[in-house]
Image 1 (cartoon, one colour):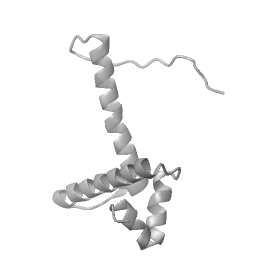
Image 2: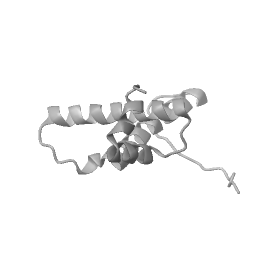
Image 3: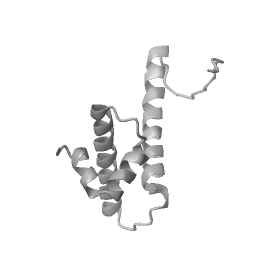
Length: 104
């Protein structure tokens, strides 16, 4: 059963915004948080102790590319597997990487 109770969220802003503008900014912020959460859960980025800033940025970009490739594959194949299930399958069987890379 779904719980349809309202949840209130409060935002502080120095700019006067209309409701539509505030909603846009709030959703934009949550999309950034969602991406950070995915990177931390699937790649454990918060515990990465790489010292070089350039290498950190390169790893972050590769992680984002990998997540996007998996999302595209999941959407195109209509897979019901979660992201980590697709990642684990590709890890355990290198041939499972081919569909993720667009090679059937």
